[in-house]
Length: 209
Image (cartoon, rainbow, N blue to C red; front, side):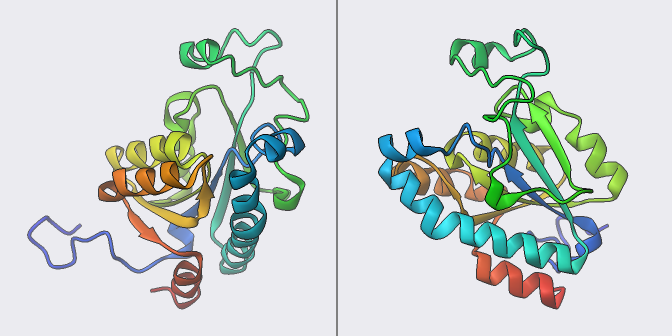
């Protein structure tokens, strides 16, 4: 393993598909639907024109390369939602178990062997066994995408870095409710991850570089 004094000790490193996981955070009906589209037109436009096409391209590329794909969705584990974090209760996030709101968007349907993790807090590392799963599979690089850039994406990037993974954020495969919030978030957590575009990442995954 490289040490901090080694030239190879860097966030910029080759991609090994067998050790890389594409994580789609909260790409679900609760987050983006006709009501949200009407109330937050910027967010709707970003998802339709940029994020969804890029996520679909990433899914195709990662699956072709044999890399792992995982999803998280906000979803209660109990009928009354008593398992939710205090923050989710205070924020009145109630996504019923097995509901349409908890379902991954049809445009990004999970494969039959993809892992979908229900979570009840902003941080997937706090309210799921994702770290255990990633370690078991042999993943060391976590590619983070999805919603919202300044909330659950931000939380995941920072937690992944603290837990000894190499996080990569795909800037044009994430979105939040305003352009300012999105730019501020990407800038705020840039020190914890490698930030890439969809095009650059796909080239790197295909080249193993």
